Image 1 (cartoon, one colour):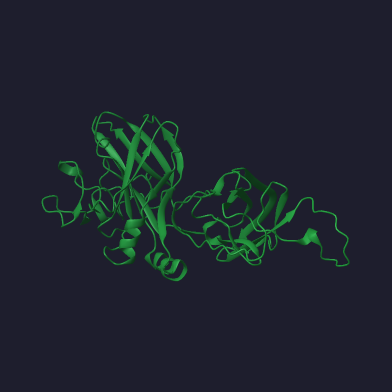
Image 2 (cartoon, rainbow, N blue to C red; image 1 turned 180 degrees about the vertical axis):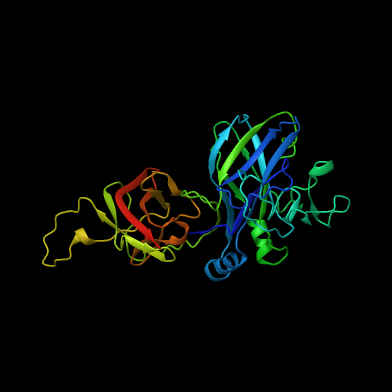
Length: 369
């Protein structure tokens, strides 16, 4: 299994009420519907772009022909007045844009980059001609002075949606594999994603609410990420017996405790019997040192030690623990973890009888720059 996280090169929020406002340096991205002081219905949308060079390198040199999926993840900072249900959607952006140096709170407003009305700066680079959209592209806009709000590819293969209910987490996790495939094959250019509310919510009086997310300039541990996930699971236990009960313990055989941010670490798992039988033998290497293989339904997870939040969750496809003739193992790409923080490794195995065994043995490590 492998999960590789790519962090954004730029992001911004577009506000329909402020057609020339740039927010390229804001720590917050806002996806909201609101009523202006003039009584008009207004919205905000999110733009976010990831570096093509890094995407191409991961898919070409690390995924290396394996089947993969891509997920856009953005973490909630604050929300208010949420409806019981709502849906957001993302599309690949169809026009280049300049991130700018503005913030929502700047007075006077900064207009040197992308905004609702312009791709570059105030008066430069309109998003589209509303009378003649390019083939396969569209945008939506208000009449009068509010023309704008982005230009995106319309193909259903590029559309990614996520629905929320009262009980679901409000973090964004959109499956965008088709769009990343299209970028990789040069079918369309990579100008990033636009994220917006569904058409049934935008510019209506039915619901006014706000959701705010951490941007790439956040000073927290929650920057957005594009996750490339692929299955590198391999299982060949050789002559090793497989753990078949809860009477075993698992340990990390090669945890150096500190890892560089750009490193890839193979963690080896040593599985021993808790209560080996008594045997009379002359060798110093007895039954107690016999290594067992974890069953094929075994998975790993990473937790942030300070916040207790799950950074990489158990996944039946992408966090499966592999095995070769030296034992069970898995690989971790450290680039997806925030540096100068401590993390905890967890394992779990599902036995043939359906019993789930969780190994929580306080295995910690730190990622450094």
